[in-house]
Length: 184
Length: 399
Image (cartoon, rainbow over all chains, first blue to last red; front, top):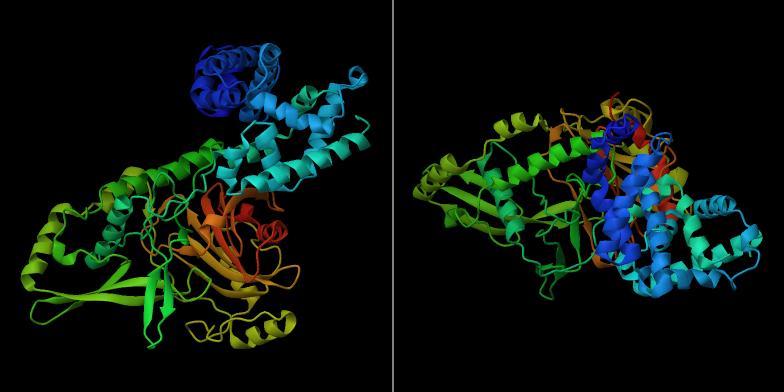
């Protein structure tokens, strides 16, 4: 079933919407959740939460690109779950990615409450648009989908040192960008 | 701000950026295993050769495997000149063939309507491959030698026939720059031919039924009246930008065509809007099939005046591509990388980059677009963007 048909089921409050979404995007969302959480059980629970979130959100929302919308919800729920678990035990792809990104940020800041999360999101989206397509893909693969450096190497054919170097340069640019935007 | 908030803030990345990054993760893993089992590919190779014997149906000399970017089992040969003047054709294990006519991996998040059309074509091809002749069942007298990718057939008055087996070797960077090398000649007796005919009568696949089942039309005959750049235009082009083409660039009817005429010809084939954003530095040729597929061979001048040879094939989804497989030779396959870019007209192109060579492809609404690019120096992202921007791929297809 195509996206528009699935979305129509959501709007009509037809419960088949969940089954059709599961059939079409279940594996896709599970993969995103699994990368972040590193546990099949946690990923499964998160994806169930995604379907519930979709049911609650559509309508009134009408995602322009349904797969991207689902990916975003899956990622956000997975990150929240990972953060809860991280409080108990550090590690995994999520923890590693956080440690790498922390290089962009000097220390937990007392100004964080002043920063509008929405404005930050828009700034980050703007920053991503400044990257070359390949740079952006690699950066998002690492920090959006939380793919490992090794997986990115396999997919791109780049060497490990090249991917790490590329990510390091982009993080450096991001740090400067955040400074210029007043976040740091 | 915490790194957690930063990570979370990335959720607002544009949909297109997410899909692009996802396509990178969905893509083929560029891993090389030169000693991968090749039984399946070899079976298809043999099927292709034997189809040539049939003379009735032309098989494609390409291979579709679960990992279809590379033509598995297709060996790239290098010419080695010996001290005594003879030449040896040595397999190059670092090189691979990439087909321009077989689809690359279909992206996970392709528009469902487009995906359905492409998958239907692929399904037909897979079924066709499955019913091809099997090497381990066919008469040994006609079994082609290793490395053979084409053959010819000569009948004799006494009822026997001579089979000549060839392999194809590149003699230039463009996909069409190849020469055929004879590797074996074999004469079959009348009895052996009878055995072969008997085998064919029992095992010949039914292409007509397959096309009907999938609602496809067979690729029509190639139009041989190539539109080539004439010498006058060639000289003028060379004066203008330092680029030049082979001196034998005549059209088959002896007339010289201008670049404007060639561009107009290409755009009239299967486009609903102008295909080129400007005229290329020069054309090598354009050819087309009655069924609507067509091919462009042209050159661009890159920003540093380097020349990029571009060879694009446009294959319609509703056409079954049998025969005349077109493929690019990639000498340094293991150095490859993949990515994507968005052309000026908004078309998202997937890119396979191998230093001096690149393959750009896209699953358009009505056709599969695939272009091989070669330059004498390593291609850059900037080059690829310029090349992508040059064509309005969104013009391909009919409304």
